[in-house]
Image (tube, rainbow, N blue to C red):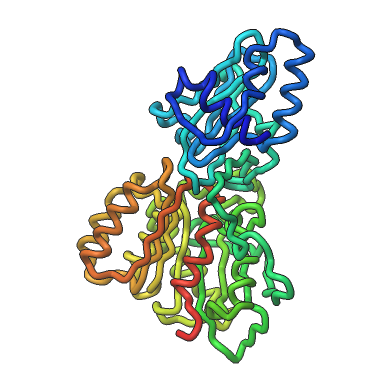
Length: 401
């Protein structure tokens, strides 16, 4: 049934609207849905389609989104159209005449994974009721999106699930620190690896947007660290997760202020927080053993920390960096006397940060700064960033170094 559904959507009533696509296998089963005049027949056909095929319907690079319900308009919004910022992607659904069934046909890279929602009547967002796959994204706890998983996308087991029999590190949660530099309290969490020994010295990783990176439905980074340390593929590492939410009012997130190349925030981390971490935990103090990472605005901030204080941070992990927010970052890297020892940078290729990331990649290569650059067919979301976490940690903290 799945093949016949795909054939119908791609070759029959979608063809005049979206252009011809040809598949080798097909039937005319779904053609009846388009022409059915009897409500009972149409209902049975709808049940047959939605019970025997995954929705959205997918074949290679072709996707058909389906929705059934009373509406004036049905629109699909997501990473594929930059959540409305791209006008080149035609995201308005077409209603099959004389029915309450809506469809949107699109071409998506076959290895893509994207977030989306359905917008009803231009004012009401819902999850796709026909799609069981979902992904949390956003800041401060985020929200649930429906998830489009193309046929060639493969879930990374190391970033999504705890390995059987893996040992687990410990997390000291919600430590509140009064910052004199910032004039307010900041919360942070600290991960110590399994077998942590105060007689040893560990590399240390500072994580912006720490709450989201820790969240098991977003970054899931505690699980990733446990998995990689258990496998022996990275060094045991201490990780400091900085929470940008107000400790009293967790709905108030200060990341846009703190992560915008903010001198006071840089001073807080380098003069206050790092002094506390160095005093409380057995962590290395050499730049070659200390990294800072972040995503989006946090990616910009991580890049800035590493170029502003290469005497403290020898490594930077930069995911989907919002370099457009502060384009001075390019000049800083182009003209800096000292650059980080190595940089990991990743970006999605679908309405993410590709242009700015590639521009920075060019500067890093020109300046002979060691770097690893990775691109994926995903958007600006935690599903993307979580998938690259193991690659980033393997590059920054490889075992045996």
